Amino acid sequence: MISKHRLKRTVKFYETDAAGIVHFSWFNRYMEEAEHALWRAAGVSIAGGASRNIGWPRVAAAFEFHKPLRFEDEFEVRIRIDAIGDKSITYACVLVKDGARVANGSMTIACVERLPDGTIRSRPIPAEIAELFEAAPPSDDEP
Image (cartoon, rainbow, N blue to C red; front, side, top):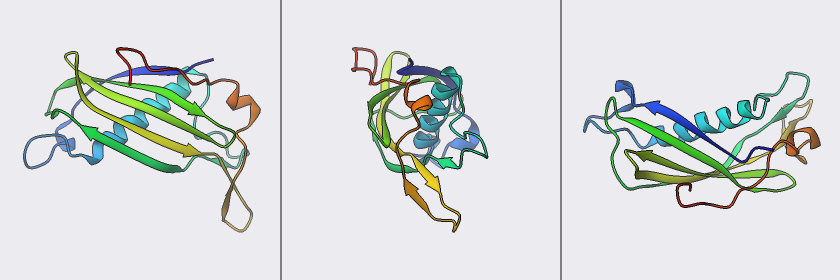
């Protein structure tokens, strides 16, 4: 079972704003990149298969910013599963540069199924996916 993952990243020019720092909207993207890497590390894709008809919409996301990131800064995105329920997964995330916390955040995703009429409804996380993941308590170097 997997509960956390680390992703190394470099800030791209197009991720910065007129002040020369990473635009706040990119932090959610960084967290999502780490989430997808976590799923790949577990041997699956969050996109699932077309026949699965399951999706993972984001139902909550938040970030708290401590230091700026700038063009070409190298940093690490550390993500862990904070909680896994019957129908949702909550992640905790921290971005670290040179050993210092840049930002910390959280995101909750819900398991849904797509219905024939195009709507979605929540559903339990399939057992074959739930058994791949587990929640992990925070540690000194994790969110």
